[in-house]
Image 1 (cartoon, rainbow, N blue to C red):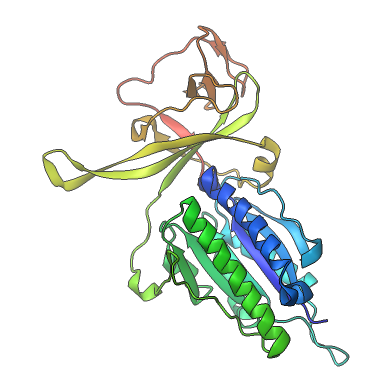
Image 2 (image 1 turned 180 degrees about the vertical axis):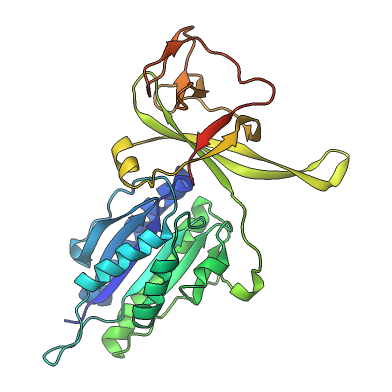
Length: 347
């Protein structure tokens, strides 16, 4: 039997925390459920999921459709697309069956790349390896979840770049139905017409459009700030997510002011986060951040308090507190009118 390998290369960086990663998780379940009732897909499709943040990890090796169960997606720090691509290529080397004199190999693998941001690693070597050895033998469809991705970067590794303009629940639902339909159509094509050309479904009625890289000349600024906190009460970790906001200055409408507005705070598994994080950090001033969340682990009123060690933690009504990062004890102070520089993730 000739297999149709389907890879999902999924960005699980900090900026995906909250609704985006939840929608991807639900979408993957929907894709698998719908494919299992399609006789062509059931006969040919094998699925693998590779996640990347600051590091990359194969969450699910290439598995026959009827045996495949979507994994739980972790969250990590950074967006190392180069590392994700390297993990994909290494898996292609070991998992894909090549044509020999005795038998035909697998159909051309299809890779769906989902990302919402720009690479934070040195990806050029991985891009060169991909273009020299794999690009002609695979079909890579890159999907920008929202409009924060630098299209010119993705254009270096594929001609098929799609933009999911809206990332609400309804748009995600329609998008994953489109992915399912595209896989079904391609599996039917390889079974009946003996061709491995990708058959993408029509995008009518979906906020999904194919992008022309020539129309995107500039680069994209940072769009998210993500802080890594630790709960003082439970010692569990969480992420605080802010999104970039630009607004006209009052009385100077031709000029814009930029800051980052609170989106929410989300508990994470510290071990899986550490395993997928690059470890690199940068700084941002607290004056650029608008809004303070409650702690998502224990409900303490202040979810962003900074210790002298640089660790971010939560504080409730108690007067004396202990930093869960370094163990330092003391009372709260003020950062002053100029704010203070605190550690942020790469997003």
